[in-house]
Length: 525
Image 1 (cartoon, rainbow, N blue to C red):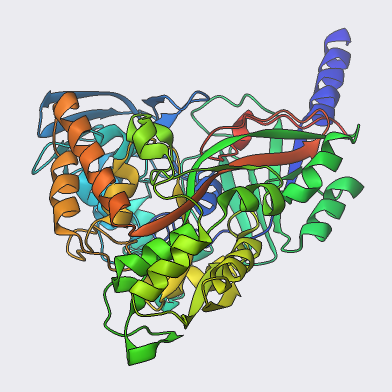
Image 2: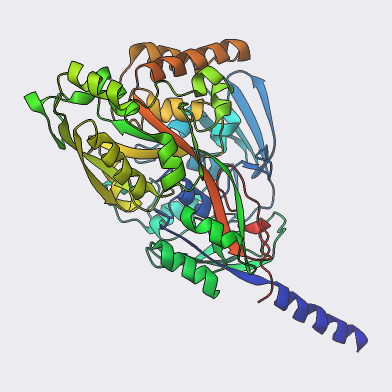
């Protein structure tokens, strides 16, 4: 009898301490298809459902995931032993067939992680729990690339006719966009795009829960004030992206807390440097002014990054002249991190006159309004700054679900963009964002300005396959120096990310802005 009383008390205590996590962000995940969109928040949310062969811990170190061990017997071969007795959410066994299928799926043309699927080579099943990857050339950051490739169930994908990733940019409807079947700690219960997405704990997960979250309820709330009000009223427990202007007030509230740190993400401006005529502009002579380095430099020197940091970002930004998501990508080289040219309106006006645009021109700036911190506000203030050199900018701000497919269709002349994530190596931005677009292997898939710089291309391409660390460092630095000198992009800052939460909620803040819910503890209400 005493044992039954003790059990009842233990179960009751468990029910009290096992909590639901209600959280919000300014925008929704793009899709539940893990290979369709390579967007950090989408990856983070899908990462509660899907897993990879490797996984990052709280310190960002890579360790075992769906693979328990691996070897690299020669520069072109990697071999992985898979974790036994792992189940997908529908009860199917996880095997090597699922790994081979998933990597090949990630290499499909509609995949937004195609460049990473190509970078890890071709997978081959050795036996039910062994997979081998064969590369055409060495990959010095193979494991980091593998950490970007989610594993799906082959049979489930075939059953639901989703063997290829959703064609997001062309607005394809797909079963995998609103349904999921992973091996991860949480199971997708319901998905209402733009409204609410619900997950519940996976009782059969192979891993260890360090937190107490039983159910996740994610609600996109676009308005900053409404999102803050939801947190203050207790309607939500956690906000991924409170407005910077609200952070000082949040720090003073006893029932709330701010958890913050620098993010591994660069916010920058990209420009069409390919077309002879802008798609969205009115320019004397009907030219493309962005093909002229003097115009690009003039725009660079007209940007007051310190003003943006203090007035728009409320100090939650780290202005930089660097062009990698993390300073580590440039080996912390001060010469590659310093601002290339100073903020100087007179110099900018002189450059515009030398380029033949003393009276400026008109152009449209494509801008997300629910992806990065104060993204639309940044675009508006940039338009005001460029007006000082007589460039008339129309800010066209849209939700991420609209602006990112627009960029992927190369339907832009000028745009604000961000890039980052878990990888600090320069390769994470050199190949997908800066290199020449090559649809055959995914290189340059996010080079929406269609920039082509042959000197940079040769250096960056060699750095991506150079196994010698010293030689590779020299190649990366030379590539970054060339790209910066030609002002192909206009770097603004790296974000400092504040999270806001109920007092007592425990969460790990990582530099990739990743909320790992299996580590979250929500206090009893």
